[in-house]
Image (tube, rainbow, N blue to C red):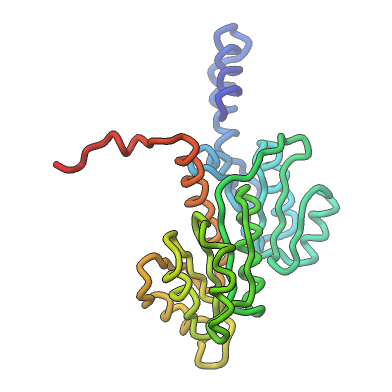
Length: 269
């Protein structure tokens, strides 16, 4: 429950226009909503900075519709991942102001009357090849939902080593990077050697038989010699985008606020 709504309830209680039982019921309804088989966490935005994301795979269209409606009712931005085209078609009919990205398989929207907020933080999403595009676009759409400024750089894999340095000015000043690669998964280590920010590596299931559905790329990235590379799961574009977005938002906020509370702490003892 946000501060304004809490204040409104406090005034109702003080003026005896509401009972304590009504207040407790309202508080509970703000924390979660039971929607058939789904219990939607409506308090996550307050705790974690962003609302619950709806994983669309294997959920019914009715369940997804109910979740999107309830999030919008609570004034929270919506992101649905791994959404099939037929379910997206239904969502767009119900919420025509939403955006469906068929390559990323994501649907995102905010309430039409929500105030516009300028993006903050800077993240670049980099792909080794065009086969990595669906995973990269999932990261891209996640970052747009988080209201982060994003630059996407495609097809700079290690098979053409001259291509990456040529694009370096486009991402060197980013707060965080998402690097998506299949095959042997070498690109994140190379990128990590050029930048001073965190690199979130995403192995993809792109590759021939010995790639083992992305396991080869995953193991290669886990063994990266670049100290600034961290690795997420195979094809986990959402997870990498989310992590990079959190880093970028914190970096942007710290720059805006100046000295942080950590600078006043002395841990030298």
